[in-house]
Length: 122
Image (cartoon, rainbow, N blue to C red; front, side, top):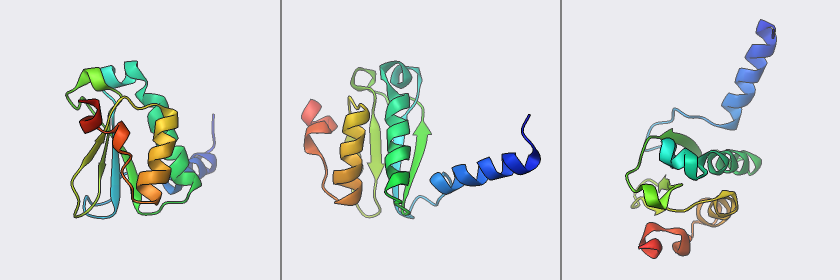
C-alpha cells in the first residue's frame, strides 16, 4: 500500500504530464476515440504515444482526452485535433509511429499530415 504522501506525489506527476480539464478554447485538444472499436484497433498505444510525446516536448498548450465511438469504426483508431479558430482535423488508422509524426508535424510545426486524414482515406 502506498502512503498518502506517495499517492499525492504520483497524482502531481500525472497532472503535470497532462491537464485534462482546460477550457475548450484554450490551446489545442487531441481527442482519441477509446470505445471498444478503437481499443480493439490499437487506440491505447496511440493515446500513450500522444501523452508521452507531448510531455517529452513539454507542449503546454496541448491537452489530450478520450472519447467514445467517433462513428467510423472501420477507420479506427481515430484521433481528432481541435485548434482554436481552425477546422477540426480527423486522423484515421492511427498507430504509435503515426501519432509521433502528428505530434512533430501538426502540433509542433502546425502542418497537417494530410496522408493520415479522413479525407485521404476516403
